Length: 99
Image 1 (cartoon, one colour):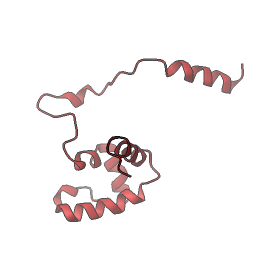
Image 2 (cartoon, helix red, strand yellow; image 1 turned 90 degrees about the horizontal axis):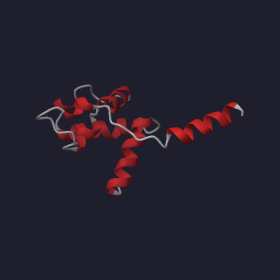
Image 3 (cartoon, rainbow, N blue to C red; image 1 turned 180 degrees about the horizontal axis):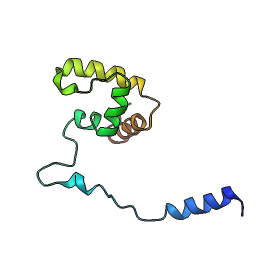
């Protein structure tokens, strides 16, 4: 069995395993897990880092909402090729039919 056949076999087995969310720190008492606004999604730590790298402010909540949206629109477009941007767009498309 060649390298790629072994990987394919491993991958098929791997995807049959149950998935466990290990982010138990997200379920702290008094802190809601679900996003309460678009800003909770856009300011998720890793996605926010990508947006910052594209010029988005490090402290966006200090801006008024109109300025924040303008900054987000620009940074979101510039991060279009990243995995987090893809995940946010795919989620918005699947849940809300938003492209």
